[in-house]
Length: 407
Image (cartoon, rainbow, N blue to C red; front, side, top):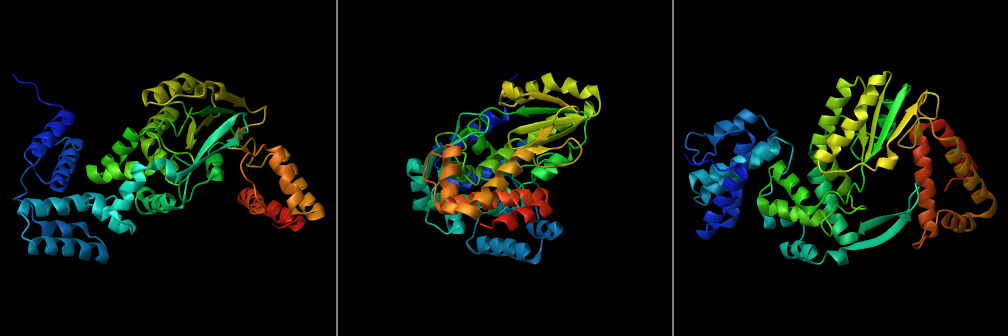
């Protein structure tokens, strides 16, 4: 008896057979997307939609008036162009799969370019000359050494912000993911771990570089986008086969890709009677029972099974008797900012008030070994950022600091 093909091989054979038969690639992308969706549901691929009543399907979804009007306009336009019934229904099903996730339907590269507001030629040009689109520099890490920053220039940054706002921010994340998402912060992250007997801290090694183009492409495909669109979105959000640290889209993409990791670690925490959270590459477990310690080897196992590695030197066990810090804040009894950080900021503001902003800017640059051009405007932004950080944790303390000097 002939062995059934795996979903991956089936899709590959289906794609290659139709390419050889010179089937329209945009139509083929829609078919492959539909078949992938059927496989993900555990169903056999459906190649005929004769029994499907599109009008009834649209009505059953109870979309808002604007969305329903857009779907009906799409249906009307395709009927007027004499589209084959199956193709018409395929377009509607594709749109509904994305709309059900709160995502914008994008049918092909031209459609993507039109929605962003640029030409298709420009999108492909950006993908072909990525080195022209980024500024690369290093910043000193608090733990020692330097971190490479790959910052997008204005052209591609505008496109990445569009992808972030219109697609990535609309994807649901695991509840235990605290970093780089709307309504969450280091404070909400710390609340899970305040006043605990034991805190475990882990750090994912080379977090963004560990996520390559193939994984990003797979993520966009898993959201339901056709290959042509997914490929272009992945090209626009990666650099030299990895997520660029400095791009506005990288944290959101990482959060989506790590949904399975979050789910597995949350399950582990429940079994260990512990709390779990992840803020970017910082993983934290906490609890009041020694059973939380059993999670240490299992966290490493899960992380490695999911294609990542832990920076072993950063695995830490912190008991109640020592200072417990989570994402830079002290959580022993309540959430507070480390005293040395407040002392430094207060001294800097005091010196700005006495000796002027420019003199303190030079001292700051030397102290923190900032290599790139560091202007007066940059320094003002640094001070504002530090004050915003304090205000988020302790508003009254922030007010007292602003009274010393307001940048």
